Image (cartoon, rainbow, N blue to C red; front, side, top):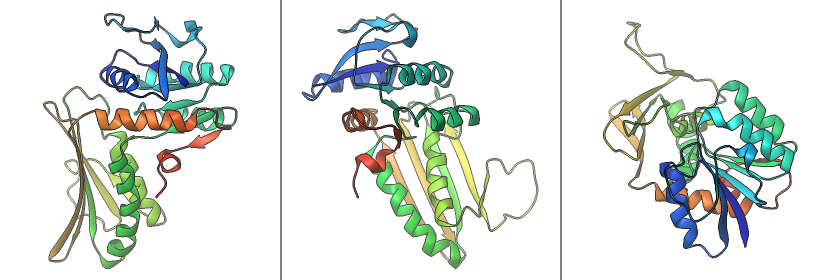
Length: 252
């Protein structure tokens, strides 16, 4: 059985994954890490990753950007693979992820769901056909009112997938209110909505002359992300150093 540390165990996703892991005979959470200790868990919980002395095969991280630096240092030192699910990382932290992956296996994904990762592939194909035909590209993402980062990491991943298919020739526009000018043909508009308890809703719009093609993914429960994270953890345990993503877990 794979032994796992849940980094950010007392947050919404940490508790969701804790419940899912109880039903998975292939993996066991042997320790958790969270600065908030007001939740009772069946495994020991440490206030910081540096103080965790429990042996494990893999770490799953759903914490916050401020905790990622220490996590990467810990995993590199201990040689423990890490599934990095926290979004909103700075450019410096992304560089640190790249550097650390040379010494330990890291799987980083902005979104762990099967549907989103399938959508990433489909968007590449659509962009290659529709953008050259003059279709404008817009992306709208919606999340709950407690989400800190905007746009979401998933929205940026979707935009990046489209842009990669177009030789990265497009720029991202996040706010049209400050400039009064016509839309540039080589831009991807990205809008963020925050409200209520929306788990996650992403819509990519290809708007052409007299026709519109839309791709949409809606998550109704955080369980879709938790299931993906556990599959990623089982995949990553024992892997050689390197930078992995969900496309390595889910073979298309």
